[in-house]
Length: 207
Image (tube, rainbow, N blue to C red; front, side, top):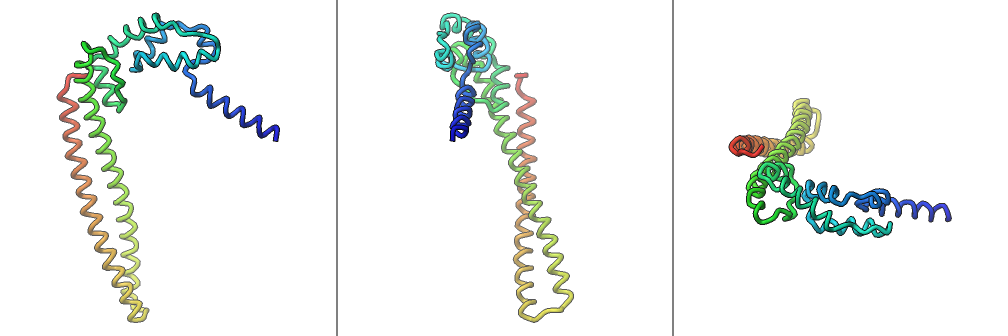
């Protein structure tokens, strides 16, 4: 029982430490301006310092908000650009409304374009996955249809069994045809969306 409780404590401790933004050593040696720079570069809002405050409170350390703000605001000037907005959007990252009003417009111009590309790429990838799944099912049906056809040609069965096989064969043929139409639609749709993606990707100026 004691070992079991010890194990639980260790797991709990690891979970807590895994959630902390800074450990004891980092809190005590913290350069809050640099930490503000790093958080700004990641697009974290100014309120993100609250997470550091919580982590460091356990070690008796209080963050320097003024220094953190200096670093954070300096980095936002580099973060809130059309180029970075595009990169953030294309990577599918969220936007935490961190850019000041005078920079937000240019950031969002790039971000919205990148986000549109990200969503197009996600849709294209999903269509390709769906097409592969449908093709795998179609291949299995090809094998089953061939097996049933061989059994029907052999003729070694009762009339009722033959009818059951014929019904199954027709049902599989219908499903096979449906899958083929679905695969064609998916491939055409993916190709069309890929064309849209390529045009949009080459038409913007954010690199």
